[in-house]
Image 1: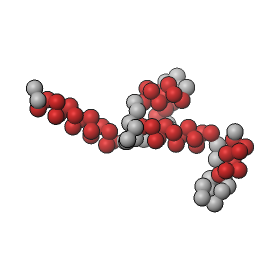
Image 2 (image 1 turned 135 degrees about the horizontal axis):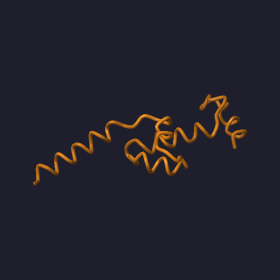
Image 3 (image 1 turned 45 degrees about the vertical axis):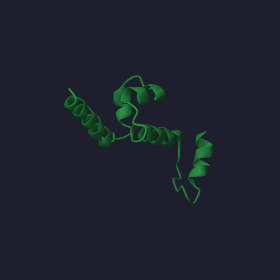
Image 4 (image 1 turned 120 degrees about the horizontal axis):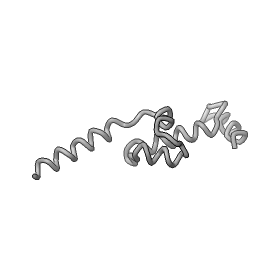
Length: 81
């Protein structure tokens, strides 16, 4: 797989000469954690086969916009009580 990814990475539109499966995992995790998907860290860790979420933390930064949305939902719910 890495052999073929390396060939793909040399393409003019990609330009990542040493493209590997690590890059695919990293990209997948980052996309999964951000809007519009916004999956939880434990679920991403499970999907990547990580035993601990601390390993998953090295893959990406979480989208703070998701935290803002969550806080807004909680505040809106409290207004209705």
